[in-house]
Image 1 (cartoon, rainbow, N blue to C red):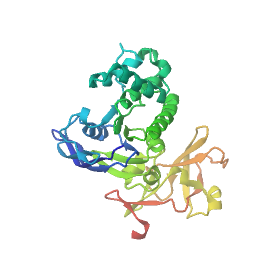
Image 2: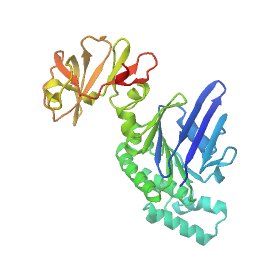
Image 3: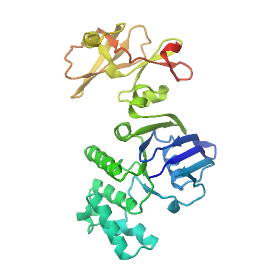
Image 4: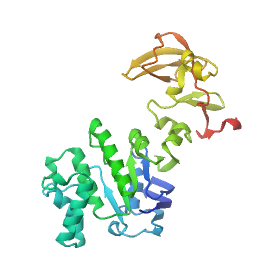
Length: 343
């Protein structure tokens, strides 16, 4: 295990600041997720940690040692890519053993390490197969096994599940987390998928335009977003934002409820919610509309469990409230969160 740290790291491509002065430090053995939209700089940051991209400025430290200028092979890291990058003409055994052969290990040592990694990832029965005869989830495990045999201090994973279908992706998330917990290696994982980030990360670094907007546990970044970008990027549907003149009021769709539903937990000031549309999505209902007293182009969403059988007629007004303690406030100009006592 090792701590990964970047200090003031930047990467410029001509006039484009792909990564713009990022400071970040992992903990030993944690699963740290870099989350953000496409083009936000998360993969570039990962590649600088790996040594695949030189930083324009700043330092990369692994295990307390500055590794700027060191090639990837001596940084004690292993990287798993979106494509898995398996050799199609080699068997699973040879794919896993390839980095060991490149390091000059003898045949017996290679055999022992491959068998160990394959058993750990439950692919020892597949060692004779070629990648084309494997499922997506099995290919992912082969890529992980090939990384593991090098006994790295850090795993770097660049959207390794994005090629899997939705059902297989959920199972692969469980497998990957179980594996990481078992070996205890620090992992830094890049994704644009908030479900992956929320479900897998010990902490999440939310990135946009080359900067980290917030670093915290999944609960922290979801419940107390640092700014309006984090508030609206995390969550499906995203946080509702209402312009209150000097500041913005934010609340999650699941915390915006019909008054009759919210009453057992106590209710705030009722808001008149004009319902425009209702979507039934099996376990949930999404209710779309506008709140009286705010601009008509400000769309508001309520998310209700389907077990809540309150009738909500379309094109009519209904009394809704925000669950107490769930209002968030943001500066109208900067987008930064404002503590309630500062208002």
